[in-house]
Length: 211
Image (cartoon, rainbow, N blue to C red; front, side, top):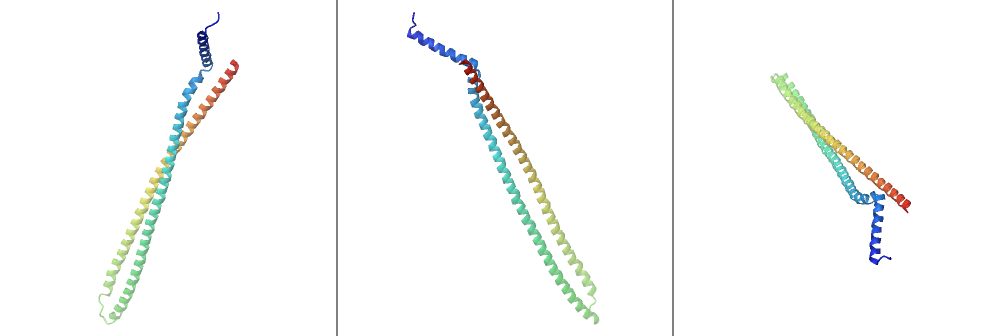
């Protein structure tokens, strides 16, 4: 007895469902791999972008730190050059003053020499000994102060450069860790992609065998 159109339709629908179920039984990764791989791939892309952004940020910070170190070093060099210039000016001024003092002393000695012949200069020795030590003492104090100021400034500059170098080393270490993390994520992505291709090839072979 021939089947009615409705019965034929139901039979065809049932056959299609059975065929689809048999394909899924032969390839259990068909649905799962398609549904699971897409979100994980998107997450991996997002993770890669985040890591790349972090690396760019760290590199930008390193460049800014390096620029800051260079700028700070330039400023310190200018300060040191100014201190040296000031010290040179002070030395020139002291030399001029000492030259003037020598001239005055020589002039005074000549005058005292003249007056001593006449017996009118009883304070010749006392005036010389009174002025010379005071002048020399002031010059020594000025030189010591300049030396201390320069030494302090150089020490502070070295300490600051040492601190900046430590910070830069820490930033570089963090950058290296981020690069390693990025390489790991990329390696995982390649592994999953290769696995997906192998699964697809295996499924295609099974379908060819069925056909």
